[in-house]
Image (tube, rainbow, N blue to C red; front, side, top):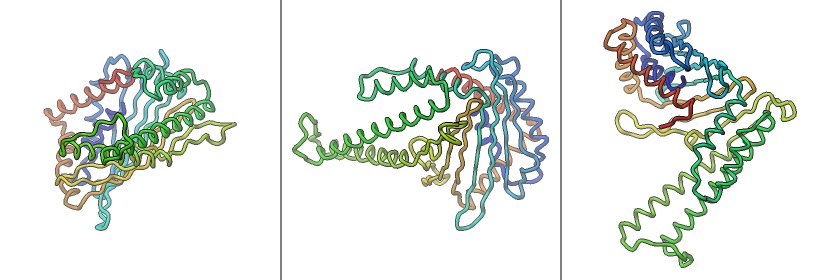
Length: 338
């Protein structure tokens, strides 16, 4: 459901800026397609994608899109339902000193949060590859405990232990990379280390080690900023909350702009677990120049207009997009990652 939401949202919601677009008609077309895709599906009961017609305003360059859905047979609780609500908001900022798009999104899965954790941990245990590495036994032990977790207080303790283990593993790997660099640079304390004699191979290996160390250092810094809280207190915990979670190991994401340049998107994220839901919040700012925003406006407005007019060829394209996203969502829920 989340991937379905993302694909649909980013294929049409950046069409910020042309009149006239009648969102009621866009919503009606999308609903027809969504109904056809999930009809008689064995997992998803319904999906309702729609723009917020009260908020979305192309002249003001702001959009809000949501996707509501229901899982009629969740894999983590046989026969039980789970409700999904995803909402994303995007607002253009035309400030000449900081132009771009401010985005925020929230995904909420209304279900037994602890059952979901146990299910995910069980999948992790089944797919765990035993390689005999240093932290393997502790990792497996934590997964086993997660697969049997029965309270939010216990969940908070397990998350704390997991974060400590990850930080320890990252610090250990950083030390290894530092030692490798020292050996590549000629240190005599490198028994058993194979240093390339070819200058080009040596230079390439140095660059590789430096890159790996730099990424680990950034990850280490970001992990130290992660907060794991029991709210309102550990004795009366109702929510376990992660904040400042480094997505993909980073607090910022690098993306390639239309002219080939690399830019960073600043991110803020939080994940909340409770006995009846899982909630994920992500916000960020995409820096874009005025001409880039204008280009997006022209290209994506055309797509949104085609949805509005129920263009036959485009409807087929959207149907395939919805269909593929539904298949990916179901595979993810069942732990069948490709």
